[in-house]
Image (cartoon, rainbow, N blue to C red; front, side, top):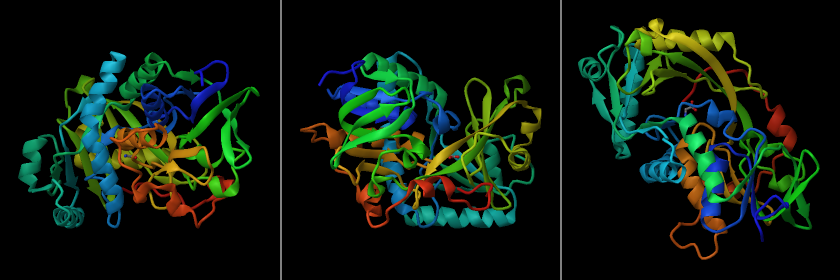
Length: 403
Ligand code: GLY
């Protein structure tokens, strides 16, 4: 098939967040004519992110399968960063400096120490640190900090630089980037055949890759058994500027404060990102004042220099949560449909692996890519059909922070 403006391609990718862009770039590069559709490429949760590549620090008890996916993708990151930068001639801001986790008090330290033991039982790279050792790594820590651990392999990328570079790489690859909303997935018989845009035009394709973040569960046209079980989970993040104060962090700092996690991610530019909430609620991009207060209070408990930064913005976006916090990658309950969604808090981290796995599904003769791991295969939810109403109406009390 021809790529194109004429509404035909081998693959149409719905969504141009980090996942859709990475997938579209990989597919076009592998020889499949690809159209990526999004009204706001590089927007949404990918834009309102801190770019942490932190499978160890974000490990929660019982989420060992998600950890394995994260470690797999983290290993792909150095080559992926180089490849995107070379393909776009743009920087991506990949920084390999590790992450320091600190406890605000003795109770928080007990939790971190337990977590560090859990890391040890899984053979992860995590080093327990005394208060003094934490301060050696980060001299401006608050006086009350009570020790922590260092995750040497948890790095960061500047998500906004990355998104700009990926969009340029997509453009240079020859894939089409169409700035429209998708009104619905087109299905003929038992097969996805393309998409209809909000202006009524259609793009027909051999395969549809659904990478529309939390909206993946809301698109019209899919039969009930093929609707991915993703829901919106709000994340709110603060953008601060620390350059004028001269009080910069040396590495990403994650604090545990009264049991609540908070993270501070320094950029080379002097920007300091402070996040993030995780709130189960209907989709909105409105910032909540109470979240700003809690994020600032908790950050100050571990890094008082936050008081000297300039407040730039509070931003919010909806992450795509799945029932088990793991992504859905691969063929779904409809021929021609491939999912690349449900990445929840790990979209940036999991982008290289997701793009490779989707390419492995669609590029005939691809042998270098392993098949889809069962832990992220959509088939694990086959027994649990999900309705579009559920994607938008599942409501729980707002929760600030969880990692
Ligand atoms: N991965 C960090 C966050 O979602 O807040």
